[in-house]
Length: 188
Image 1 (cartoon, rainbow, N blue to C red):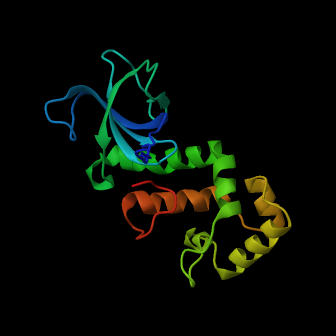
Image 2: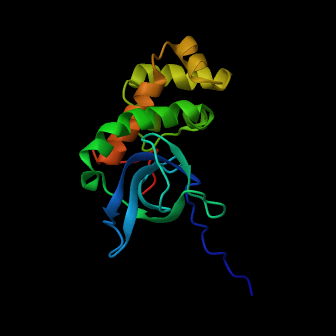
C-alpha cells in the first residue's frame, strides 16, 4: 500500500542575533532561562527565541548555527516570536540585520525576482516589493524573458531599478511587523 510521506518541515540552519539577555527568561517555553537570544532565521526570516549554551558570548548581528547537528553555542531553538513581543533594541536592529541577509543571499533573492509569478489576475508578486510599480514590473518581466537577471547590479543596470536591497528589505520588514496581509518572503 502506498503511503504519502509526511511533509518535511523546513528549519533554518542559521540565524542572526538581534538581542540577547544573559540572564533571561524564555517567553515561549515556561520555566526555561539562561542566555535568551532573539534572532531572525536566515532562510525563513522568522523571529526566533533561542537558548544559548551557558558562558557563550554573542554579538548583535552575529550569524549563529542553529541547525540540527553540531551546534556550538546554541542549546535549543525555543520557538517563534511575534514582532510586537521582541525588545525595542531587537526591533531597532532588525532593519540592518535584514539588509545584511538580503545582501548576503543575493542569489536567492535574484532567483525569486526571476521567477516571481502573478498572485491574482490583478496583482503580480513583484508589485508587492516597495518601489516596483506597474512600469518597473513590466520592464522586469520583459527583460527577464530575454535573459534572467544575474545580480542586483544587473537588475539595476538593465531596468534602472535603484537599490533593490533596500526595497526587498523593506518588504521583508513589512511582513515581519505584520504590515502586509500577504507574505512572499517570510514563512509563517
